[in-house]
Length: 236
Image 1 (spheres, helix red, strand yellow):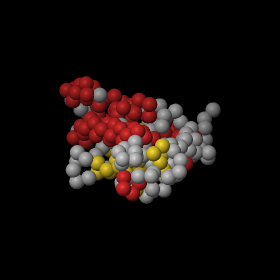
Image 2 (tube, rainbow, N blue to C red):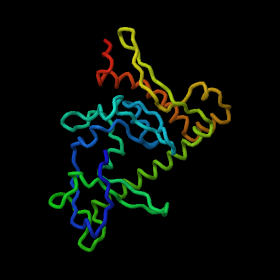
Image 3 (tube, rainbow, N blue to C red):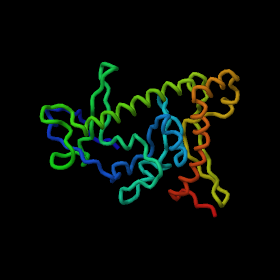
Image 4 (cartoon, rainbow, N blue to C red):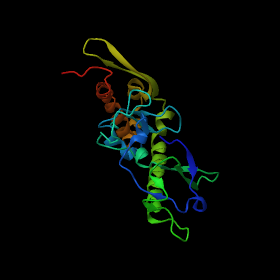
């Protein structure tokens, strides 16, 4: 989704303007998106949600079962789903890390047509201060970053208790054959059930169990996506 990162610099980009677009063709090849715990309840209604293969651990919403194809962006660039993940909504901006963990840089995709020098809302005031449009962007980016960090902390026990495994999800075709979605990181039911009551109670109180159950229920959406993308025929 992000192609060419550049650091936003007031000296270099003082004339830059931002014009948000409803055209989401930039996400047409985005097959998955990291989501925060606050997005979980809306995401599991339409996406299969598993977990990132690399740490730190975050939930990942699958928007396709095929590489570089987003089943929820139609040919016109419109969003065909009910919920648009924050990861996509933040485009073309993203926060970059610095040597100081308490500080960040604002980065943007330099190829994004939403940014130009001739139309839209200015990012900077004449005095070099952030204009309201950029202040709103930064507030959104910071909130999303903070929610992702909180989600990573919430999910840490899944690694500590070793309940995650790399799994294949099999979908039955109407003709009796099967199709398999390979290599997703998911909660292993047997390992989950083997946990002691104290751990499970703690996970319920922290909200982690709601994430686990939501994730497990969302795997039913694999069939829906497979049907939408023509991988298997729709059942009557």
